[in-house]
Each structure stands twice: as structure tokens, then as C-alpha cells.
Image (cartoon, rainbow, N blue to C red; front, side):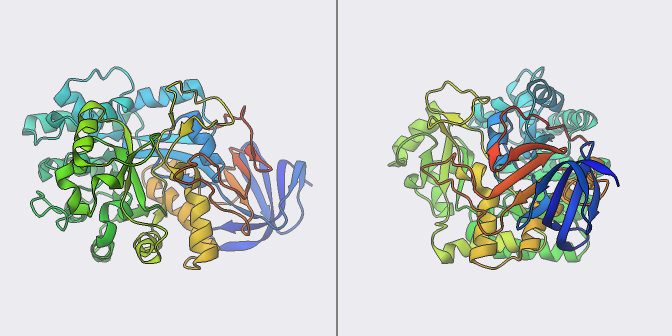
Length: 490
């Protein structure tokens, strides 16, 4: 009999690709799943998973929380692979290098960043190092948001092309933060992605219902690019950019899919977004387009919400990069949560967090310390997206079966990225030969615990989380010394 390094014994194994949903033993050696058996397996270490679900590790397509602290919170929410694809990073080589030097609990990867490359050209930023922090610092500057002449666009596209050659997983396009950019530039970036067989990941610009003067409707722009260029266009957090217009947007996506274009979507189960308070769409005079007021906005780490337009203007001028909650829908109101739920249950929609970096209120951040103290704050979706999805959509509302919810957290995101990234074809599955990135959870107790006032409370019910066959979470406790995460490159 073969003896494996580790055996997860007698768990309910859910493999979303083959449809397996049965009690099995899973044998792991060398960081790889070696066997999935209906017969008992022998292991150097055997962990009894009776009564628990053994699923692929959850894959987060949309996380901005890429340091060790953020990874740890996400590990306790069942995540094994964290990807920064919407904002991306520029240059990606520097972002990968920093993560490799510091070590990460979870697997990680980056798209290249159209927004940061554009800032580098139009604001003259130094591109020799990792520029991820420069995005929020410059988010409110109009110079980078304007339409650019063709020679400048060509320069930006050239920078992105070089980054793709360095292993970027696609192109992140934050066009919603520069909503007056000429649509031809967006098409040029999509054409580049199509030429190399990698997706784009778009934060859409304004919908025409929100801004009748927009150069192009945000949803129309994404689907048009898919049809005209043949690129795989991924529509980021369709819930928060569509809000009450989600049915119209999803109907458009459904139509172009039927015509042969590849457009994929994602959503998260929260009614509040988060972004830099200097974002163009948070200008006081524009808030009414989304049915918002200054009081809909609150700064991360501050008490209360912004009281009036003058205060909002002052904050946008003095600290445009400050992270701000934007309360778009009341998730405790069933009628309003239904908009979110429709985005989450749309055909083949992925669950993704839009996790944000942790902020330390004292200013003295230490992403390596554990446990996190009350000084650390973030959006609750950083800590609780997957626990909340399983609690609300499966156990309470019954709109998704457990295997289908697992598929949306694992196989669907793996396949979104995997079209041009062979490494992702070994993730999102519980099959022999696949990476031993595994999440073991109790389907009866799994739940989010983070709230808007206690933002870093980690989820409950995720009993074991393994990355490359190594425990990052064991018996619901994080292992602080575990840094098995590996880079995912195209």
C-alpha cells in the first residue's frame, strides 16, 4: 500500500469539474493530490475529515490585500490563491519580487495595471520599483484621467505589452477611475490582451443611467470590446458598478455570450464598496447619479460618516488616497440584497472579494504580527466574503446548492484565469495530479463574522486550509509561520 505524506480521511469531497460529491479519502504527497479514493488510504499524517467538506481551495480573482496580514485573514475564509487582477500592479516584476522576498501564506499573482502605466506616462512617475501604492496617492489627479493622443496611447500599450512578457496574468483596466478616456484607448488595450490570449479585468466606467454624458456606456464598452477584438473581457464586481441596473447589465452580458463572445463576471455579497475617497465618481456633485449623499461615505478607521458636501470636498483635496466605505445598497434589506444576489447567482459568476489592504489606525503597520489587534481595520469583505456566501446564499436563502457555491469559489475563477495561464488548470479541482490547495470546512457552521464595526473578525467553520499540501490553517487556527504561497505567472 502506498503511504502518502498526508491523508484527509472520510470527508465529503466536492470536485466541481467532475461532479464528484461523495465521501472519499484524499492522499497528498509532494504538494500534489496523488489519490482520491473510496477506499481508506495510508498516510504519515492522517486527518479525520468526517462530517466536513473537502473542496478545492477558494481562488480570489480580485484582492487588493496582497500582504501577509491580508493573506492570513483570507486564509481563515477558505482562500488558497489570491490574485490582484482588477487594479493589477506595475511593473509586475517588482510586485512579484517583493512577495517572493517577504514570503506569502497563499499563492499570489498580478495582472499588469493600465491605470498605473497611464499615471507613469502622464504624471511622470518613476517606474523602477513597485508602484501599487502610487495609484491611491494619485487617484484624484485629473492629469492622468484625460483623453490622450495616439502616440501616448501607443506608449502605454507598449509598457503593458512588456509587462505581459514578464508573466502578468492579464491586464487590469480601471477605466471607471478615468471615465473620460477615449473609448478607442480601451479597445487598443483589449486588442493587446486578445493578441496574447490573456483576459482583461475591468472596473467599468459609468452606466448611461448614471451619466447620460458618458463617452460610452460602461457595460456596452466591455461587451463591444469582446466582440470587436475577440478578447476575453472579465467584468469586475458587477454588483457594485451596476447597483440597481444589474438586470440590464447582466442581460447584455448574456446576449453577447450567446453570440459567441467571452465575457465573464464576478460579484461579492456586500452592499458597501470601498475605494479611495478621491475617486472621480465620488465628487459631491456626482453622488446623486448613484442615489448617494456624502453621508453614504465613511473613511476607513474613522468614526461615523461624512456629514456634508463641504467636508467631502476638503477630504478629497487633502487626502484623496484615504480608503472610504461607499454604502450603495442596504444588504439587510431583502429587496436591496436581491440586487446583489442576482449578480452572485448569474450564470457562471465567480465569487470574488475586492479585498482591501489593512489599515492600522495608529499608523504603525505590522503586516507580520498575529493575531491582529483592534488597531487594524479593513472592509469586512476582506475577512468574510466566502463565509458570508456560504451562509447567506446556501444555508439561509437556499439560492445555491453547496456544490454550486463551491464551483463559483473555485473552478469558475480558475477557468477565468486559466485560459492563458496553464498553472491555474491545476487549481480549483480535487483530482489526482492537481495542486494540493484544499479547504476543509463544516457546512453547518461556516459563516462570516466580520462586520462594519469589527472588520477583522475572521470567519468561522473553516477547519483546515492547505496550500501546496502544507497547513496554513489547522483546526481553525492560523499557523503564523506558514508561508507556502507560490507565484502564479502566465
